[in-house]
Length: 452
Image 1 (tube, rainbow, N blue to C red):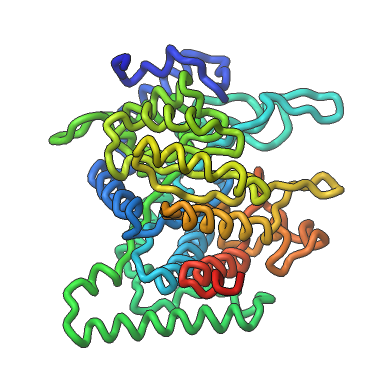
Image 2 (tube, rainbow, N blue to C red):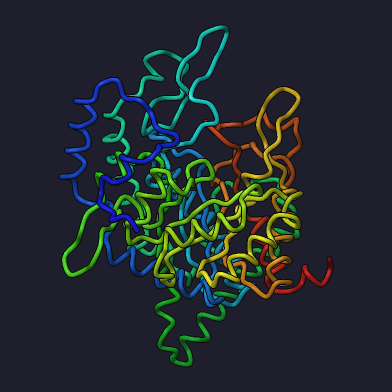
């Protein structure tokens, strides 16, 4: 294998690269980022790797969720707290259903970059660069807004740091205390048009968990303290390699290089070329790395990719995030899983049921169907159960806000214009996300499987 170094990615084809018009300004920003404190720590990265290794053998379950494209404007206490609350609510349901710990990973504090299918966008005869996320440019369709500005990386770093600071303060302050799951309800949940059976099932779940914790304490269970506080990890697509490499470094008393912008970066479907810059960069970091795999992936190419990213087959190192689309699961997932199993590669299989199920309305609005999302998860569980492998996690684009972006779960196409806020792809709202967790929990506990 060709030796890796921190800039070796620059010699490879760079998908989704952006052309900054001021190389000196780019170099100055990268230099500054190298001097700034890391956003996460190597011991947090290693702890997550341990938990992912346990999830790979069925001892834990991964819940990953958050915004499609985080914006700097969303760095507000209420918005951040609501994201954590919905992840907590969902994880509580999954803990109760699966009887195993849940690893909570947010798509936050760094999900500022977005891949685009086209480098440019046209409106009324005007052609401008596409919006690549707030870490690169702005969504406003103006020449100034769409300019690739390297200083945006410093803005992204600052907002990621503020977000992480608030998340950690909430966790330390008891926000995530599992003794009181009844406190986690979003304030507007009572006003929502939530089906009574879903609301009742959630309340019953929280009550049972509280009773179980009190019983464990009453009999002197020493591990209860580990259950009453939860840890949040962060993740984002490692798209902008200037930003990621600038915050990659060695640390005392550990071998190798750690990417310290996030705990778990992932490589997207558009950037996973075996000879590309992203695979070259991420093969050299010690972090857990996710990789998105769509329905067109060749199973043997996927095996080669996993070997490149994890040549020593280290436990906990790789998360294979499949995004097949509900209609493609039965055709595309089994040969992929079989090829990886034959190669004896250690991965955590995770289902991303969002990205393969996009649809466009007659008015041109992007949306997703709740039923298709649920169907992909259930079919993925069924495939893994049939093959004797483990589906160990789910990956959602969701928000704690009362948005109307996905149809189903109480929303019709006519509702979409009411509160469509995403700057990129549609997200599950708080009600849809909670209902999805309850449906998923029903599958995991065996109740829903018996009805299908």
